[in-house]
Length: 409
Image (cartoon, rainbow, N blue to C red; front, side, top):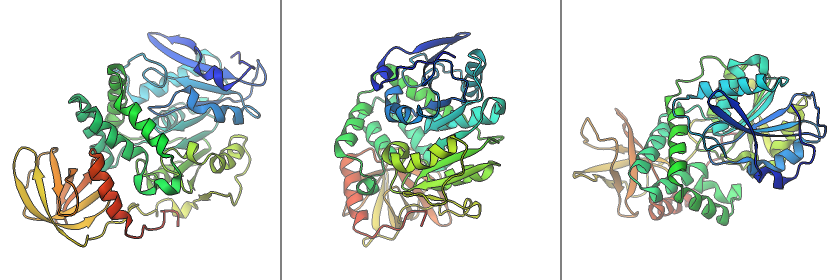
């Protein structure tokens, strides 16, 4: 590997290097302080809506101690090549082929969001090529609510409902109930919303393929064995802290830390807190026993985190109606109501359509929802948050009640 030694943030927007492996094209950029650097490189694998430019600060920080490689696999980042036939496992295998072709020493991947699944699979399937592994926003997608919301996003895109899709996706990535604590600027939320509303047909197809890979993924048959650090935003509802902790518990050499006041984008929202952990981890040093802005979980805590991150209480006015778009209205009682979901009681049909539902109350605009499961306790539902006005009204109502402590408390 020949590294560039003239790194500047402006270069990340430039033309990447191209490596062809059979019919597949891999885009990458490689930087170091030394052109012929034999140390283990850090490999950056971003999320669905991230490009090389997203990592400008990370590259700058890492270069003092490590060579850094940024990689876009087919249909990821700035790589526009579509690859509908490739599953997550096949893409992870492409990372190994990339390492072999360029004769790289064992890598140190940093995988974020969608990239975390690829990085984890690469480490598990090709341990000889992976020295250390750092994950944030781990996307295993075994949680039923997350899967339903992802399926709904694909259905909305197929129907051309870009506005509704964008609203739902934004609420998933940036927890509206914790926006003040996380410190996400309104201008950033609006910019991300516009980006989602303006996806091109090619970008929609890439999103569809990447989402199908996550939905089709059967789960990890084996977990990474190398030293692994898992970082979870304490307010991340999209990939929740307990899911990160369970993943760490399944790895033989993993630690998990909760980043205080962070959401799904912890690496960018709390840079200093994350860097205080990943910098010593990547150099092979012992992690600090106490670190400002984070809490390291003891092994005994990994399987004990609360799976309910938001308050679900009976609202003051419990009467409501469950209405379907194609006809039919049923009176229900709201046994539990939260921003992300509810539990309804009522004499409901045994078989319910999967889509097209609204929860109608006297105090709120109609709330689009998706049924999850129906049992003795009632009908559990998740809100799709595809209507901005309804979501804002619900958030205002929920926020009047005291929010519980984060899962790390």
